[in-house]
Length: 148
Image (tube, rainbow, N blue to C red):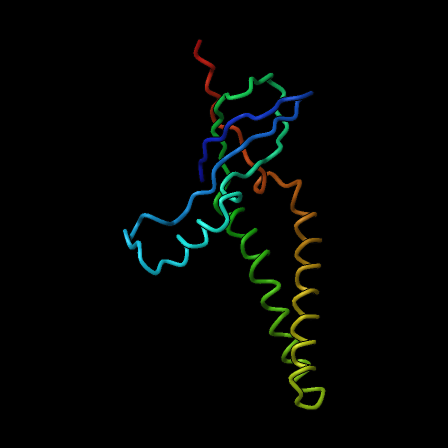
């Protein structure tokens, strides 16, 4: 189970809006020169915070901390669905165009884009079906009480 602490931003009628920070891979290698990930994090600081809405019946207070967990197998399958399926269809589109039409870069580019879009559409529809399965939903592990 992968665990993450989140902060309650809003709670209204059983729906909690939770905020969590995106964890960067930086600072592991202590390389301050030429690090592409560090440069991207500096360019996109607004992407550091993510929000998630989840149904919680227990009334919560803004600022309260909650520990969420998600099953590793569900996370890996979701990542494969989002990344590998469109990539597979991208190559499939290139393959089909390359062997069915004259060898022209425009046709290959068009086949690549059409294949990738088909992959994204299939991934989106497949994700909608998986949305209600328990393995793909975050689970509340701990709710920290607010200390006064």
